[in-house]
Image 1 (cartoon, rainbow, N blue to C red):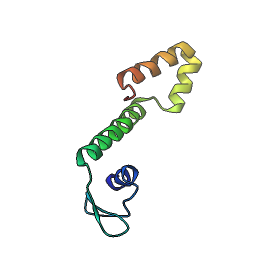
Image 2: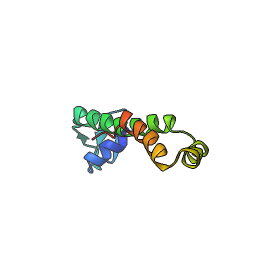
Image 3: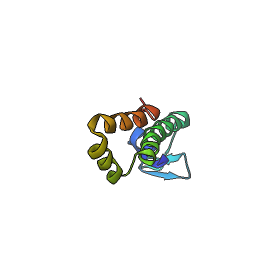
Image 4: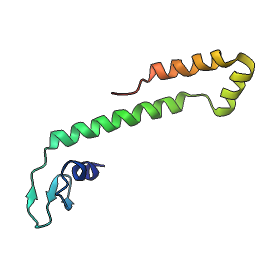
Length: 91
């Protein structure tokens, strides 16, 4: 993931050794702003984390269909909204 972020922010980079040792096509070392890369990693982690937490807590599709059938759409919507509110999307 780190390398993909470096390539995204530094298109002149053609190779990376280790975590932050990046080089251009002529073998020149490119100065990488490690804090910028770490902030992007944190942002991506937060974007993924809420999805994982929601998915873990959502009822199975079978149970959701059962809720819809026995309790109605509003009840299903309320249960799903509670989970979405508990784990909001990161901004």
